[in-house]
Image (tube, rainbow, N blue to C red; front, side, top):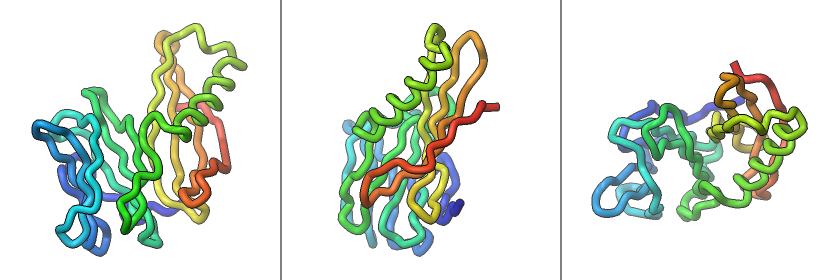
Length: 173
């Protein structure tokens, strides 16, 4: 798995490896992600943002065509939102609560129901983990309240055809 262009967490402005693009969290009367190229805005994405200093990470595709953004929108630890933006257009290809999320949720829910784990409270966290040969690698973690148990659903998402591949399930540690 490649993690090209993974930048430090909890900064407010992150740059592509060649420094030509940046993603910034903007907090004012509106909250949004600001994607820029050479200092010029190419996309302004309205979204909830977490507290200052909260988890924020960019993963730039090796071919320079996409950026995946992990960010925290609440006070809980870790990322809980994943975005994919096409470059240089700034078009949002994947955002929270879209068809990809629905498909992942359905697959995870089917497994949870099959294992009869649905009686407990489930907390789901989706995170991009890096770029691989076939697209963006991601992890969906499902944690079960009283059991302190969890499962990890991992796969690969190809932004060009918007398909999920290499679906694997394992016990989270």
